[in-house]
Length: 415
Image (cartoon, rainbow, N blue to C red; front, side):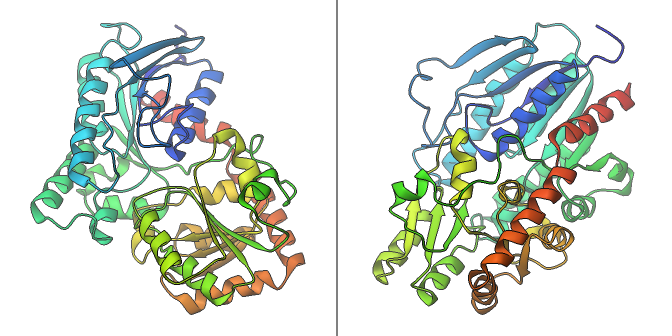
């Protein structure tokens, strides 16, 4: 192995062909690092994100190992629950999954071969200590990639209210950060959140590296897509939300906007714990211009995004300091404008202001949200201009290759 070639073990909850957003992120980071000549051994889950159950053709084994030109992929049972609503069942599943990942990480790429480092991703937060365990036995440094800060989001949305559970989760969070050699956050807002929880002696371990988008796979396309026809949509302006349909997202704003603008089609594309209650709301109020659609294969993402004329990124008050909706970068790559309802002076509003790719309003305010949508609905040329500006911005600032080099630098500078 050359002096600059790294041997890394990567621990993540999803990896291609699993189509979770975090899976897409880590898959591309791994491939980019492989392009740089590094050896990588991924330990992840069997594909399960789409239906919250192991996909057809992948079951029957506790784990499967694939050998690649750049290393290997070990996929282990994710122990999924039948529903995303049962938080205790999900937590138990995460612990089991993390334990099996830890055991498999010891032999990924051949034990007792020393490695140069571990790259672990959260959520689930439990993979932080799993990564530390791997590092202790195989060497190298631990880089902990934080996509969402847990348990803050769960606490602020009321998904977890039990004080003992929150206390245990916050202990695990702090210990995981302190055991890591580097903690990677997606924005300055997330970095400030984590820094406030740690002694100043740990602050030099914090790094801000944003997510990226594959601008070769997601490209601007004609709005009249096959996907529109499948949903039964016509030439109407389409306002789309595409992503996790959870309680962190203020998707009630979308329903309120649909009620206020019956001539506009609103699409909620995705699944999650909040979807059934939103569907009940639409049904009970006889709102007939909201269309619910399931996740599509990752290879259709560009087409799905092109189907929307305006995309929305609504996040509940206070959550911009714990989560960065990375879907926005994909929207910009698709050449579509964004209306974001999110805490002011945080990453998404700053990006929209810098790029000129959309409008940001305060979160959880129906009137402000609807007014911003109406501005873009009434001005087709402005939508096109914003979409083009967003595409140009993302090509310059969100390159996957540049992001991978920043991860590489963390490990190489530690040698």
